[in-house]
Image (cartoon, rainbow, N blue to C red; front, side):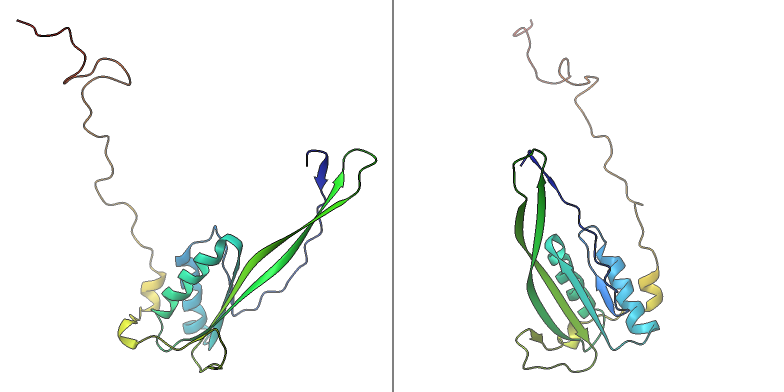
Length: 179
């Protein structure tokens, strides 16, 4: 492939719904949860949709599970889809043809709703037991969680003044017994 270069296609601009949370592999789960809290509490939305693709699938599932344990009575419908992505490569030398490569990427869409959803859907999950749900105040969700405060990792209790390979206290290579 060193004789080809990838053709950069213009990205399609897709309008995101207000109820949609797009999960990326770089984003933090706590940020997605606070967004969900804002949607359910402040904006009085009855449902939200979590979407993700590729490496972010596990983070989307984690986010949905945490949200279900923060808000009572959330119905869930999960859809798993494969999306085909076509990459086009143009030759750097003359005489070669354009090459197209199709790869398949997994995408997930999780809909969480306070109202009942279609329970005949194969991806439907009923709300979890209310004993497992610990509702958190909106102020508590927005409050920053403490970082640090502990004693830290420290610098360790090495074997002496040695800085790397070489002389160190304790047992090591010696000249034998000294008397």
